[in-house]
Length: 426
Image (cartoon, rainbow, N blue to C red; front, side):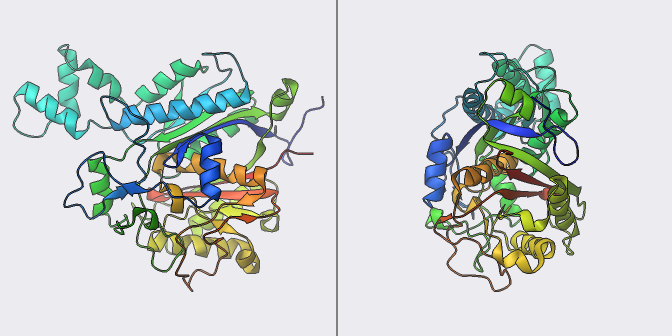
């Protein structure tokens, strides 16, 4: 078979396996059915007391128990579930031996309140304990399990052992763009000829008191607690913040030739990536929108396409007043007069904001939209915002003819990534 190359002469990178878990449930089938059905996975937090908190809701995944509970433990388990589904669908390698590297997006890892309290009690300390205290305790032969769990690279090490990936696993954190960055690294490795396959996983299980309080102090979270399922309102005039959520997405990437040679199912093509750092502010986007504008333009150009070729946009769409406004500015600038005609939706209206996992979760949903030729809705869109004149596919799913789609991930600190996906080349 003659080599298949994209317009830039690079190997075409295809998706041969996908796996997902969100607040909607476990697996591609359950998630897609509920997503296009307009169901919400957001509910009142039951994992810990939210008394006196302004935000008492989240897209937490309580149906995947881990004991003892910690954010790294749940993050790892979610990544494992998504990875298992993706590898099984791809029918690649053999159990415990994946023929390529692991690129993993994980949230920052820190010793949590329960463990700090335990360390303080054991040491007789009356004040706050720190990571250095854990290191000293471990050196003395204590709390090794805590140390192993709260090392940043521990999740990557454990998942690499689980799937038998090749080489050193790459663990990364680029805020809300992390999941897309993990896929990008896999694509680039295949394009460079370093591997024929890559396993890309993004997971986040960090709905805990610390993070809920921190995001609340940033005034980033919705406080529309009742009813929980109506809280996330991307692009609506009455939007008031995002809803924290947990989840994981995993994809198996392969070169087109390698996938065809082994008769693998080709689900779609990762056609292009764009990225641009902002560095304007810790949380806010540059007022001129230039970083996200260039990010989208770079992704479309990298795919060898023009804005006229994009049939659908899966928005970052957090539901915060400023983020949605800036994304609208970016879309209208990139797509011009056609911006009002390109359907755009936000999955976060139903699954919440899965933070570190969002870029992968939403890239998978974007590819599912292409495969099924159906657009999931943006629910809770009851009060249109005249300042956002976009086709947000309100409240009800819509059939559509789709060939190429753009998925946006714009993270805190100006870490922006856009990905273009398409159907199998003919």
